[in-house]
Amino acid sequence: MNAIKKSYIETFGCQMNERDSEIMGQVLSNADYIPTEDIKQADVIVLNTCSIRDKAEQKVYSLLGTLKKLKAKKPALIISVAGCVAQQEGKRLLTRMPQVDIVLGPQQIYRLSELVSKAVAMGKQQLAVNLSSSFEIPRHIPPSPVKSSEDEQTATASFKKVVTIMQGCNNFCTYCVVPYTRGRETSRPHDDIIAEITVLANQGVKEVTLLGQNVNSYGRTNDSTLQHITFPELLRNVAKIKGIKRLRFSTSNPKDLSPELIKCFAEIENLCPHFHLPVQSGSNHILKRMNRKYSIEEYLAKVKALRHIRPDIVLTTDIIVGFPGETDEDFQATMDLLETVRYQGAYSFKYSDRPQAKSVAFDDKVDEQIKSERLHRLQEKQKSINLQENQKYEGSIQSVMIEGESKNTDGQWKGRTMSNIIVNFDGSALSPGQEVQVKITEGLPHSLRGTLV
Image (cartoon, rainbow, N blue to C red; front, side):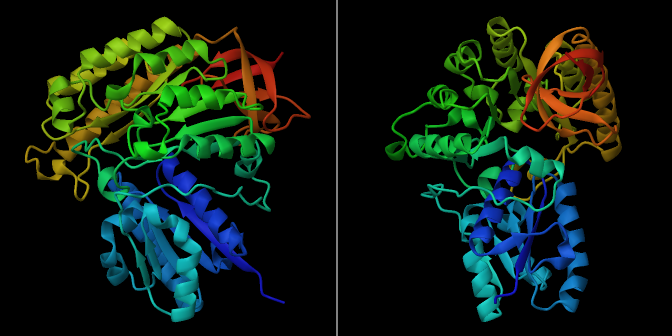
């Protein structure tokens, strides 16, 4: 009888990486590896890395240092580094970290089990970081394996899924490494997406998020395989799949937000009224240096159009503070934008140089202390806006899809509104994926509290 083989996957960074980790888990499951939550029990360890920010990259190297000791005690252990740091560093990573057996880039994750087999059989390090301009996302990804633990992630897995519709990026923002680590845009064929979501819906999935680096430009690449379907058309076709109660998407570049996509929020009943629309800066001067290809005036016009057609839509964003050349006036323009748009959530970060990004060569870098001060001011301002906007829900009744038991309060459940706001409330005999009506009693900076109706 064969010994049980176990795999452990650690994910760093964005939602795209979370989906890639799920795919790698599926690939290893097909090779008879059972997932484990205990890294010390694993026969294969995968670190799925992110190089968007320096902090995430340093966490990877810190963990690899720890794994060197584990490898010394367990020589047969296979350590794999996947994702953007793997693509960015390539062979240098194998040299710097000899305890690593496999380095594979984002386009190569589907080969993971093959590379593990080679590493075991040959006892040699494996490198797979080729980026192909003709890369196509594989047609079929099998369902995720069911984990043995009963944590919240397992609970949500049965009703809530992310589906990749495209990969890579053609925009070349000056601060960003995605075109260099994930390659150029490639859109997945419409029929493949519909087929996968239909299978998921038949398995009980109720909420689907369509995922890509820039979903707005879906269908503009590899046209021969796409049947000339636009992103709004794809949304409408996914929305018709029986069993899909909630439909979301992420992420979007404002320059590609079309009137047709805006109309979808008024015309598609199960399209959630939440739009993550990264602005990055409120200054036209900085946006031009970032190569974002839109002005603040154009951005605000699209915000106005969204709110005209769907007044209850919730907008969230990404903001980079301290981009090279950012003056006090540029930063104030971003602070003013927060008040103008009234986002209900913002992922904000200090600028950091990333390898291969064009902004590395910019010579007018902002002092670290100034960046820290600006980030603190911005986050405090956004926190205040979050609170004010969430307090507007007090007294209203919201449809909430349950995600699981609340981690913070015993006896409470956690769920999300259609607009993606977390709600905590008391309840019993409930289950993940169930939709309930909740009366909101209190708005907090990052969530709502309520009672079951």
